[in-house]
Length: 240
Image 1 (cartoon, rainbow, N blue to C red):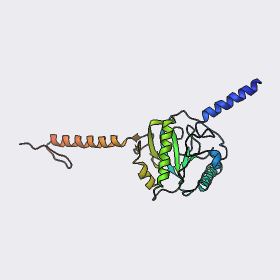
Image 2 (image 1 turned 180 degrees about the vertical axis):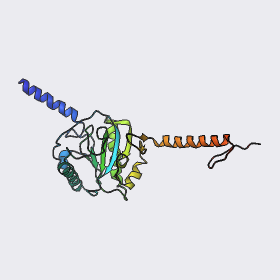
Image 3 (image 1 turned 180 degrees about the horizontal axis):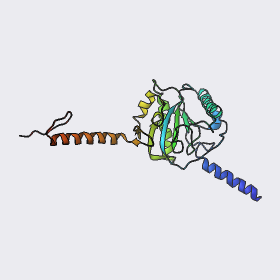
Image 4 (image 1 turned 90 degrees about the vertical axis):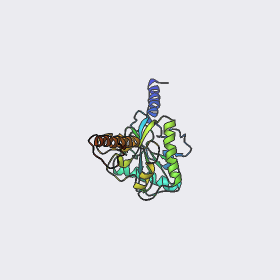
């Protein structure tokens, strides 16, 4: 075999290994639909990043609307890719994955591939789009279950950090996405993390916020007690 042929094969193997899970690599999740199955066109450019990802960011599509059959969900995927690739000029569909109302997971860019769904987080997150408008309605149970299953799968396979931070899209940019009803739902999921106002990665755990509020209130009560003042919400020991 000629040297150039060997180098070409090695380059192809290296490229496949750097793509991350998703770009036509073997499907190992029983409810995952490969790109070729939903009719994806090739990505213009695949930019891998080193995993595991520390963030999972949840989106809704708003448009296209919710889909509940394989045919409709495949059409929705193609519609999103057309909009992102042809109209916005992106390399591919922006999301890592999308989840349909049929309970199936549709591969977008895949794991460990830089996305186009959340500025400043595209190179360190898994972006999951739940197809539909979830401002007032809750996604169906099979959709929620599939999304949780995808996250668990990513953690088990080492694509997502075990202590990942779960965010809604609205927490990293000015948008109503993923819709108020869906956002309320994911706020009850494991690893959900609040973001304080400000710039950068100002993320803080809910439990830590509660502790800080409790500590601040306790300090105020102690100071008031020291200066013989009373304050609301403070409990003072009775003295003779």
